[in-house]
Image (cartoon, rainbow, N blue to C red; front, top):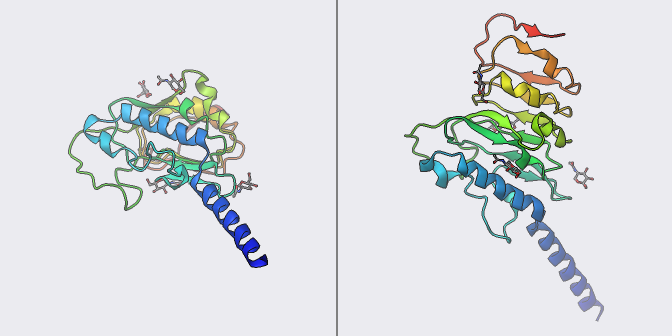
Length: 220
Ligand SMILES: *[C@@H]1O[C@H](CO)[C@@H](O)[C@H](O)[C@H]1NC(C)=O
Ligand SMILES: *[C@@H]1O[C@H](CO)[C@@H](O)[C@H](O)[C@H]1NC(C)=O
Ligand SMILES: *[C@@H]1O[C@H](CO)[C@@H](O)[C@H](O)[C@H]1NC(C)=O
Ligand SMILES: *[C@@H]1O[C@H](CO)[C@@H](O)[C@H](O)[C@H]1NC(C)=O
């Protein structure tokens, strides 16, 4: 009798755990799919089938296991998002509003090196013309947008075509500790004024932007 009782408890605990493992937060699963839909809309048509193929419309699928997504194991909230290689249309900008549902995101990786983030991506025949992100926008909250991501600590914007026009957005990402901006189109002088409020910033990487000599800064 006692044995059966403990077996029952064990089965209940196991089912609970399996259930917990399966479910990522529904709001965030939907938001990831919105993000994918948007990225497809700015992708060169011939590459659209290769956009985030593991992010699927299936309520049984745990979005915490999708490629480029990481969650906190306990809360199941999304803590990291990485898109990997994207093959965008000319003048593609990222709609930052689409990131607002991810209140716990710590690491946002928009770097766009033209190779897959891991082995499970399809092998891409890279033939056509494609571009990287060249701007950010938020038609609701404007420059303040990144300020909504209160836990954002690491932002990787490397290997895109961003220019100085994104600094007014970065200004509000005050929780940032690490900012990678390798291989973009930033030009000197850098608007240091815009980075002054990033008081938690410890690491700023700007290599590969074609600067030579010392980097003149504007402002104080
Ligand atoms: C994960 O979430 C739990 C519950 O919200 C929190 O207590 C914990 O600190 C988080 N873990 C990490 C590594 O952030
Ligand atoms: C972002 O992703 C790229 C691969 O696409 C990786 O090389 C890089 O280290 C990642 N950056 C961070 C900060 O994790
Ligand atoms: C950007 O995303 C927000 C939130 O989903 C949406 O309301 C807005 O219409 C989008 N803007 C564009 C131009 O896609
Ligand atoms: C910077 O990028 C924006 C697109 O986001 C573009 O409109 C603008 O002309 C660019 N500025 C320069 C100096 O290239």
